[in-house]
Length: 192
Image 1 (cartoon, rainbow, N blue to C red):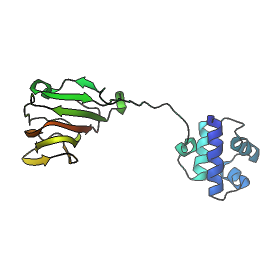
Image 2: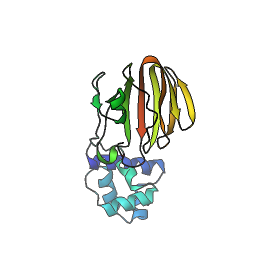
Image 3: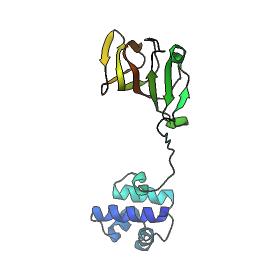
């Protein structure tokens, strides 16, 4: 639908839900019934001041009148086994990181990684970074540390923690180990 059609549907929807006649809405907004009829029939484009008056009279935010507008949004699809291999501080001790998607700019608020640890991996419990991290174990068994706490993790276990506390695998018990790591940032991330 066009923008005018979406606004028409929303204005009529909110007017009818409040049981307000076209005449009463005209009185509340200071617009003519003819103009309101044109708006509700998508025969005119509304100015911002007209939209503000309509929203005020209908007791909804102006943005509610745009609900349903289709806009292109960024999405990242990563087929199984095709995550971009990235280098992190743990890479030099055998940790394999596959990035499972990354939006750019202001929309980059989470960072999903598939982490694989093998017999070539060493423990490295000294990661620290901004944000909140969530781990979900897929394969293997490990002891994971956060601050002074230790967690025995096996498939199906999860752990969420403040990334600024020192954290990382302490003991690799059953290899290979694979886990999903998702870090959420309040602002733009700082890559360690």
